[in-house]
Structure formats: structure tokens, C-alpha cells
Image (cartoon, rainbow, N blue to C red):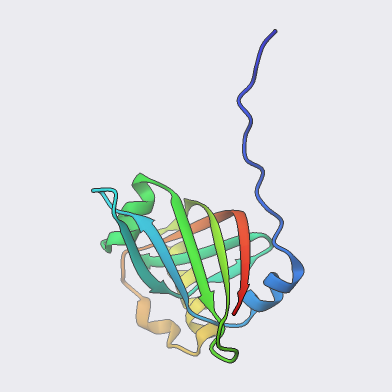
Length: 139
């Protein structure tokens, strides 16, 4: 009898959480540092289906962490309703680099009201986050 290793199936993001994430809110991500300690950063994101995308300059710490260990936690706070936030847990993989990553951050800048031209010439990297678990908190 042969056994296969079960693989995690990405979670379908529930509709109320998807609607919450559709607004341009800031996300706090947590990655795992080289020494095993958590590293947090505040980022922009986009949601496409059940995949969350984040983007950064390649030289920053959190992208290096994700390239080494793709585990990521994300918290998105509702600034209109105190005590309400959404959490996501998943695994990130490199989705785009180079010009494609520049196009991604330009689209995020438009979403968040920033200047899409301000990222030209940067060494960018975009990650796709496969969501394994979602949380919604109300205090």
C-alpha cells in the first residue's frame, strides 16, 4: 500500500472577508527572520480571487525572509470600526520580478492613491500569498 503526503488545499476566502479586503486598507505582515524571530512590516496589497499579492523593493528584509521561508501571516485592521480586523495565514511564493513587479506596484499605487510613476527603475519583487486560513475578529 503506498501512501502519499497530503497537501494543503488553499482556503477559499469567505465572501465577508473578501469584501473587507476589497477596500484599500493597509496590511501588517509577519515573516520569519533568519534567526527565527518574527519580522513585521506594513504593506499595500491586492486581492485577485483567493490570492493576496504583496510587493516590495527586493533589498528589504521581509522579501528576503519570504524567499527563504514562505510562511506569512497578514493582519488587516478596520480603521472605521475599532476592534475589527481580519487575519490571513498562508504561504508566499515569488510571483513577479522586474518590469512585471513594477507594473504590480504601480497598480497598487493607483489603488491606494499614490503616484504610480514613483517606482520606475526600482528592483521590485511581488509575492502571491496562498491563503491557508482566515480569521475575522470583533472585540
